Image 1 (tube, helix red, strand yellow):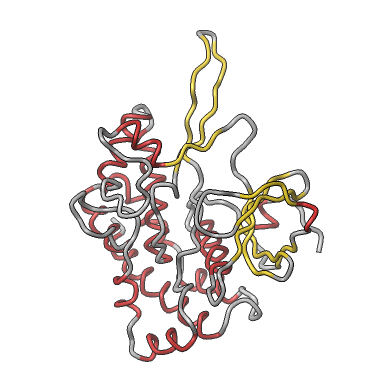
Image 2 (cartoon, rainbow, N blue to C red):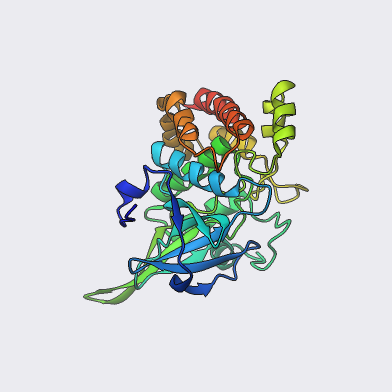
Length: 305
């Protein structure tokens, strides 16, 4: 099929984009997975190879589609393949003249003693520190920005994303000329990198065993995320528990996205999962993902004010 750079077209199909070898631009060093940038119709896209025996490709795509349906701004994602290797492709949301400033850089600039180089077990990456840093960085619009950022955490809770570390969110910055000189403009970057979601790491036999034992809730609540509740915690907060706690402490930020989840019929989210091709997603993975979403949707809907 002809691939057109239209958000309406790309966001509603599950066809696989084939990456041509002559379209490669450069490798991407950030992160642990094999990835590179390639050109598609004059636009930069990032190909991320799915690790063997995982569903990282379909998890990335399904999470992006769910984000779209609950009103969370997220990077556009397509299923993709490169020289027989499965993966996902994500359109670059960094526009000409913009720079992406990751969360670790933001926190280091606003929170005394924050170590931006510590990626693992960075327990200072707390929700309280994130809120404080954003409030200092963009005080005039911090409530609106934090409302959007809370939507990213609600998305994480809905899909079970455990990888919201301090380089997996950020701001887009650019300079704007004014009558009084140049000023730096900030906007929250779309949510990105959702491959660690929806039980994507489970082999079919393990997924079947959890389903048979009625273990979906235990599975969802067992995972640890990249954002901590307290700086002295040994592990990051579980994504669902983080929203359960945060919705009580910061209702002004979380109410909007929780209401959006509650207003979204679960059938529409499960229909997204059913659209994933059988060649990409096994029946066991499909049933497990739908059971996970049904559980998290129920819990989050119950938190809506």
